[in-house]
Image 1 (spheres, rainbow, N blue to C red):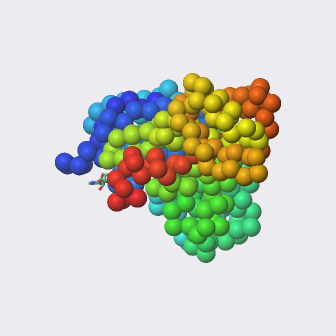
Image 2 (cartoon, rainbow, N blue to C red):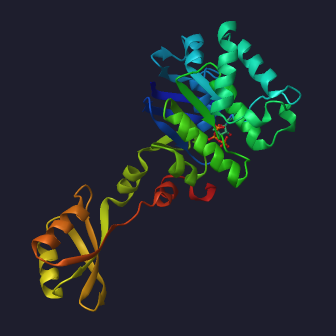
Image 3 (tube, rainbow, N blue to C red):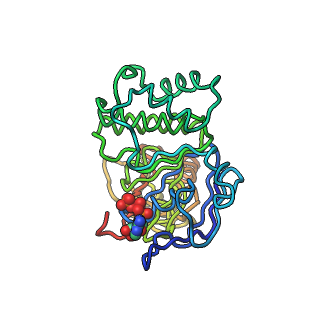
Length: 312
Ligand SMILES: Nc1ncnc2c1ncn2[C@@H]1O[C@H](COP(=O)(O)OP(=O)(O)OP(=O)(O)O)[C@@H](O)[C@H]1O
């Protein structure tokens, strides 16, 4: 649905976006993660036709961002970092205004306003002016305007910035729900944000995409191996003789011995499905398994290694 190739944009001597390429598909919640100044906003502004690029190409739902901006804008709902909301407008009045900006046919306006109020949980505040709303509700109104024309793609720039923890959770859940039906591309500089919300992550640093994958893939790339914790009731000598013979095991450390149960940390080749393979080894030897656990993904290491540490 989105195809970006070698996109480049400079402001004077600052290269804000540097040969960025990526694809995004329907049904994904894609997180653009990077420290401040990494180039997230610039990338999003180019994709939403608010900014031209110096080089490269980008298409949205098959339409060229530079040649067919009218069509591209129809495909995209955009929530900029500071959404231009009008404080003295009522919620309904503002959404109605946005149906006009988006040139929705009169016959559809009422139904679309109702739909976005429902999706974004605005029912309790429809009587209020935008200026009276909490920041969390204002952000919901921002999301509602981005959805008003029912676009297949949503682009959200730091949608939880400035919200308190409970508002952040609400907006994340909203994004996840919307992501079940639409492609959502959103930016953040906060790592837990992407872990909590995204199916795939692009890490951007100094204008370049430095990683692209699911949280699990990125962590596996970083480690280059699988680490499994296992505890077995059986003869220590026999277990260790067997571990030495397993080709996928690159290294093992005995971490615990307790009442006939021996615990190991096992390093294995990436993609070897070591946990499952070790389970079969234990069963084949007639030992009993008291613990089997693959070490959890540590995305923070990935992020810190790929971006400027001092900026995170
Ligand atoms: N209008 C502008 N004029 C000059 N430089 C700019 C302009 N907009 C952005 N930049 C620079 O381009 C680089 C990328 O900025 P951008 O806003 O795209 O990053 P970002 O990842 O969105 O950061 P943030 O999270 O702080 O918004 C930064 O070095 C920034 O200072």
